[in-house]
Length: 595
Image (cartoon, rainbow, N blue to C red):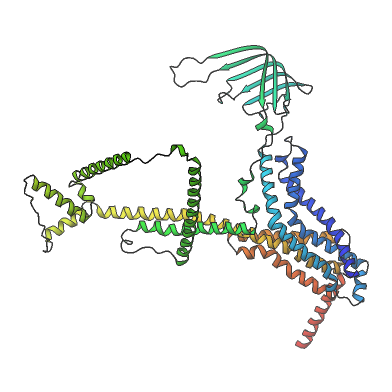
């Protein structure tokens, strides 16, 4: 590395680290303000808050990196231009692009590191962030009983204290207990004074009451003629109530598997699996539309079928084969597991010896049982059962019945059916037509057709809603996939804007660079939100929607690089005055030629 590269890179690293910390802190503050009321005031340990803040810092780093690169590159080249170091570099024969190379290489490496962080580190941190944030939200506020106000933080109890004495002393106590009945204030306790203090590592709270009365009334039974409810009044000099605080005021950590379906905690390979699963669901809904529609048109589909599109059939066959292989694999695993368990449970002492007499007895019993079954089956053949038999079975059954009738000295009568070949008479046609017209078959057919059409419409609407929801999830998964690339590329796009702008402005510090950086970052953020919204709603392709902000800002960066190479004075008034004068001269020339 040459001395020039060390100079430029050294002047860039300091502002970059400083601006990254400042931007990360600003974004952290904005993020924490969303959950301020939900996470503070619950008596949590200091390290719990530090853990949550650490997770937030890592999760918002991909958003802080582009702004940090933009601001630090502006400050670096602004300082070089302000102190005429950039002019000295150019006068020595070194081009602006050569001066941009060390920081450009660093930004490319930083973009690759940002991609690795988005794909591997940030998903794991998001998983822990969601889990911890949910647990903090579900935790009850810290035990803080105030004088003159009902406190219902302890489940099943509502406590009011008119005066607090010291740290644990209480006076004029009123307690409504809803733990036993849960229907109204049927259990009331009054006490002159008491003490509430924790014990057993603050896992339990002991409330000692002195000189009080407990009123208890049974729940009202249904019915007017029921007996009056029992009402009990108990006086006491001292009474102790113990509250279990483990499940109420302690932070219970939820298993991280509960968030396994969120796309923010998945890397690219897991997102691809999710996209494949959603695609299978969409294809299954489309295939079911054809199957359900076929049952609505029984006359049309009597000799034909609704054939789905070729791509739907191919995806259906692929999903079915995968499902079959998975079921076969699971079945093989279960069979091997059962085999291992059965082999482990076998005891040699319980094995039966195959004796000849037992085998003979069992063979005899089996033969007797089989004979009984055959006799029973043959005796149960009747004319009503023949309706459910095949033609060959019917013929065999009739033969057996004829043999049985012959044995019983009865002569079977053979009935011969002669098919009719004559045409229908007018009277017969009128009778058939009357069955359709007089019995309302036409009206019933119309009603059935309307019901079928309404059922088909409702089915299609339901399926379309489900398909739209699946497709929306599909697009969101695609956006999460492409974001891992676009957020990393944004660092390089911001460098192309910030470095040449600093060379053009030639002002360092935190004045003009901060203002310009904020403007471009706001534009970048607005374009990013707009593109992602278009992609979520299906207005544009998710690939274009996620790259929309970078595609819009990249021409600005190339334009600023071109102007910086020419030492253009874009932020000076004389530059625009000279442009206006040149435009006026051209108009005068055109007018003179016209005259």
